[in-house]
Amino acid sequence: MYKRYITYRRPSVSKKRYQIDFLKLFERYCSDIPESKSPLSGIRVLDLTRIIAGPYCTMILGDLGAEILKIERPNIGDESRKWGPPFFEGTKESTYFMCVNRNKKSICVDLKKGKEIIYELAKKSDVLVENYVPGKLAEMGLGYKDISKVAPHLIYCSLTGFGSEGPYASRPGYDVIAASMGGLMHITGPKDGDPCKVGVAMTDLATGLYAHGAIIAALLQRLKTQKGQWIECNLMSTQVASLINIGSNYLNAGKEATRWGSAHESIVPYEAFQTKDGYLTVGTGSDVQFLALLKKLGLSELETNEKFKNNTERVKNREELLTILRREFLKKSNKEWLTILEGSPFPYGQVNTIGQVFDDPHIKHIELIKEMDHPVVGKVKVVGPAVTYSYAENRVRLPPPMLGQHTTEVLKTLLNYSEETLKALQADKVVQ
Picture 1 (spheres, rainbow, N blue to C red):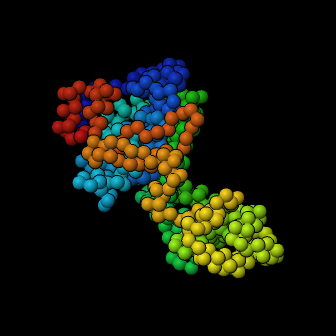
Picture 2 (cartoon, one colour; picture 1 turned 45 degrees about the horizontal axis):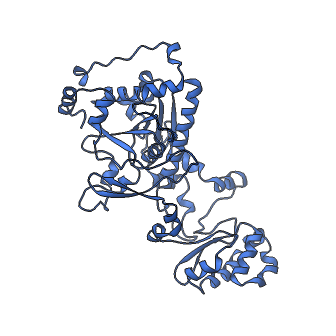
Picture 3 (tube, rainbow, N blue to C red; picture 1 turned 90 degrees about the vertical axis):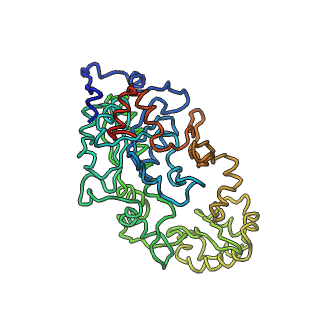
């Protein structure tokens, strides 16, 4: 392969010498001067993920200041680049790809031909994240055991459908499959209707969130041990863990779950009520909140009704109470109800269309939507980080990259490849 152009040598480092201070690791492996306010500034992530769960994880790390090197297949790239329509007007750039790939640099490397490049990058990185079917990267010499020999300090995180062990380990996994097998679709949808998937890939997103937290925990542990490790996250385990009270109900009370639409099995009222022109969701988690709702609706006569005196009774008499409340909410529009409910001690909110979400005065006030300049599509809008810090920065810095946009830049500056070497690698279709 490209060994005829580059001589790869694994540095001999004594155990004593390797036990160095973590801050020195920063200086050794990171090309950028750490920013004082970005929590992960100085951390470099080798991102071998595609689609949603992995890219969502690495995007969060990128928002926190980590340098994300997104490794993509030459000429193809992340599959989500082609997931459209919609595409940005006049381009082949999908809006789907843009939602989880900001703050990243795209490098096109053929993993089979360019294994040594990945080794070199791993030595200069802190984290590697991948979401291939278990065993696939190991076949190429890029599994954890292979990488850990080259870069023992590396945090290696695998995101899979079902994990690396068990009867389903070799099966590919998508969000909707994990949601099906993990029970989420069974409990989602109209009470007497068909199972439904959630409107966005919540199992993917939850897995990405689990992974990002696990990576940060492993980085903290490396402060003490100076050792890397392998982290495994998978969609199925994430989904089952996310069943929370529904799972506990079955495990401890033998209670099988059913679909409740927007309602709650254990709290009444807690659902979306139809109004004159839409839907309004109201939840009362305490008796005090329920009494406040009755006052707002002008139903004070129900305050002394023994059938509704506490949540246990309200759950028992669910249909009788909800029939009354549903009838009442139909009398006014969303706008009228929002005026009436202003200042209420219980949570409430209208069911917004996506257009209404982004036109919401609160969303505008907190400036959650960020705008970036993209080299091809022009202005790109994204939903910014959901978490704020009193001191640290968690922000959008770079637009989602074009395929292979940073290949030359990274290989030159980080690995010191010469023009001659780069041309040879391109000619052999090792990189793009």
